[in-house]
Image (cartoon, rainbow, N blue to C red; front, top):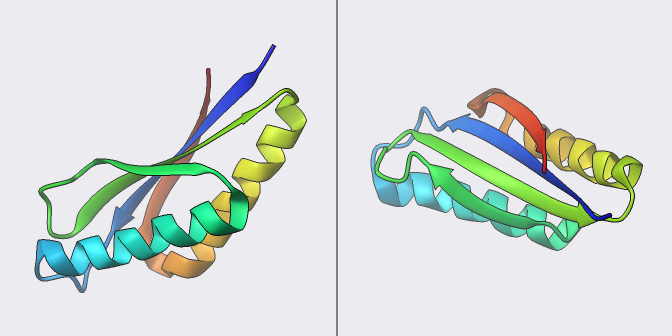
Amino acid sequence: MPVIGVLTLEIHVEDSHSLKEKRHVVKSLKDRLRVRFNVSVAEIDGLDSWQRSVVAAVTVSSDRTRAEQVLTAVEGHAAELLGGALQSSGVEWL
């Protein structure tokens, strides 16, 4: 049975003064995570906010242990890239 893991990242882009600036940060994060970890990534909340964004990264695997490893690595890399801008994160299993 396939396992679907969803990692949610809540981001606060303090230095952003426009949607364009925030979207640049979010797009860069999404692109890097997609390429490095082969996960699906989308901004799912905070679309109209200048400083807040919620991004979800999703992986599908036949093995939950492997899915956990991938999402843990994604979270760690996002934390490195975002620093203090990463407010919270959480994993949900479907």
